[in-house]
Image (cartoon, rainbow, N blue to C red):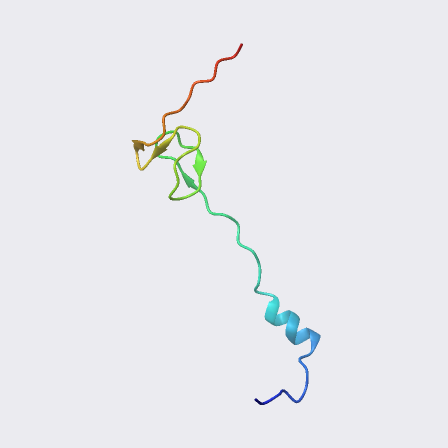
Length: 63
């Protein structure tokens, strides 16, 4: 297999890697309680997904 005649410079390597940035997570708003949630997931605040209740929210007792 062919081998490169010269190594890549540091500037060339750094400019190639300059687009390797991490993206911020995208958030949607819950249609029921209007809290920010990850898309395509049940709302951890109210338990609704796509306007329908999916998870029953447990009430905590303060003793």
